[in-house]
Amino acid sequence: MRYIALLRGINVGGNNKIAMSELKRCFQEAGFSHVETYINSGNVLFDCDQFDESTLQKMCETSIEDHFGFSVAVALVKTDSLRNMLAKAPEWWGKDPSSKHNAIFVIQPYSAQEIVEEVGQIKPDYEKVQAVDSMIFWSAPIETFSKTRWAKIVGTKAYHKITIRNANTALKLLQLTHPLK
Image (cartoon, rainbow, N blue to C red; front, top):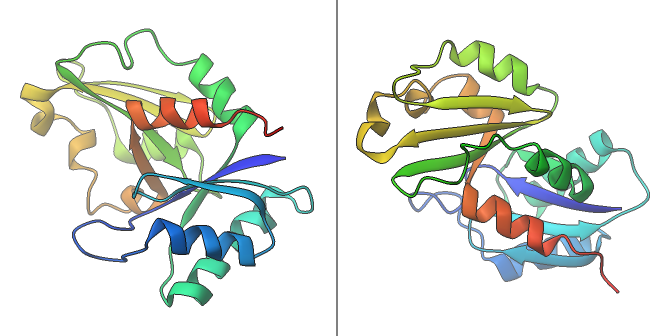
């Protein structure tokens, strides 16, 4: 089975620095196969057929902590699930170049619906939000971004239960999910 591990909060503001070559080695040493990384925000594609998702997520987090000396939360997504979620993306997501478009991945055991409820009512004049499975699609015009409910998520309890990738990164990860030959 092919997975993507989306690491939360690495290489941001000089904190929790991880070189992608070292992260790849960490995953290989943990016994995962066909390991690839994509950009510096901590996206790891790998294969593993031996464990359920909960165990696998814990293995990723433990391997990272053992290897790098600090803990990192991991959102684990099957590549088939990513493909299915992106196929259900709302028509407004990722289209308007004058808006920010994010894919918000929920870290288990939380659900997208719990996070949406915790953040609260959106400001429909400024943003659009739609939860699909374990992902939340969010878009907001760049000029009014700071007025949105979801822009103010930083520092909240909900913020520690998610990891965010922009639309371009989410779509590139989808391209990289090709089955290995």
